[in-house]
Structures are given as structure tokens and as C-alpha cells.
Length: 97
Image (cartoon, rainbow, N blue to C red; front, side, top):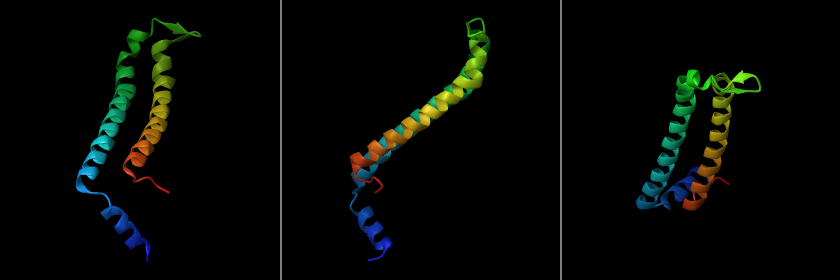
């Protein structure tokens, strides 16, 4: 049995209802991460001037959030996305070996 036959057998084992439920959870996670990305990428930078009166370690909070905070949010969101997607994959039995 070659790898294509194994992959075909694995794909055939997932019925349509399970596939739709899997895609609903996966797409919901994707939209959540995109919303986080949008807020961190654009929202924080638009609000930076309002945050500048607050100073942390001598730097205006708006500058810090625009320069470092959004990058930290991106990295944390990526790790969270990977962990959550693995949980969804395991829940539906389509995890990687």
C-alpha cells in the first residue's frame, strides 16, 4: 500500500458532518486570530497618541505598544493558534503523527 492509498483511506474515514464541524471550528479560530492581528496591527497604532501621556520606564506607552507590544501579541497569538489548532485536530482525529 503506498502513501496515497493510506491518505485516501484516512480521508474517506471522515464523514461530511464531521468535516463540516471541523471546518467550522478551524475557520472560527482563523477569524479570531485575524481579529487579534487586526487589533494589534492597526488598532494599537491608531490609539498610540492617546496612550503617549502614560510613561513606563521613561518611554511613552503608545510608543512601546507600537514598537514592541504588537510584536509580542503577534508571537503569543501564533503559539496560541498552533496549540489550539492541534487540539481541534486531535478532537476530530485528524492530527499529524
